[in-house]
Image (cartoon, rainbow, N blue to C red; front, side):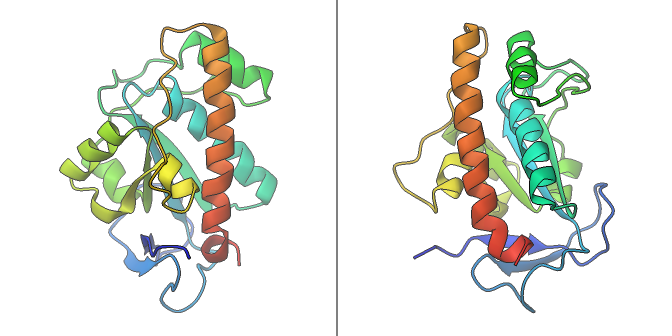
Length: 194
């Protein structure tokens, strides 16, 4: 049985930009039925520097959303200790390109109160990131990506950081992210694409 996961249901038309607070619902019983496909739902991926894991997660999610035709879902990424304006790590860029995901225009950004407000769901790469997010007020809309994708499996762990590692470490991280993001979107499907 899937545990209820509080989600914020957008009440405004599709916009794609950070906005004001929105209505709250739950994943298993959204108020008023399924999420209307004409409203925006915003997902934020968070890691440390926003150069590897969260950057790749954003790119993978964009591609997956495009393939699913979910134009009403927006994704972004940020880092808890990101330096503003850097590009994706070279190996992350190379691996993403190898899989047809473009990260050339990615620029790092630090997590901000505005991004937390914009996001309806915040997916953390590690338990430490999740703790930091909750400490910054993300509350119940933040979850560990692995746990969320697996339906709150208590055995879920964080996504290993490939930073500074060989190309194969980035390939492994990419494969794990692709699997987890697919699972997360499958879990959201009853609400976001009934």
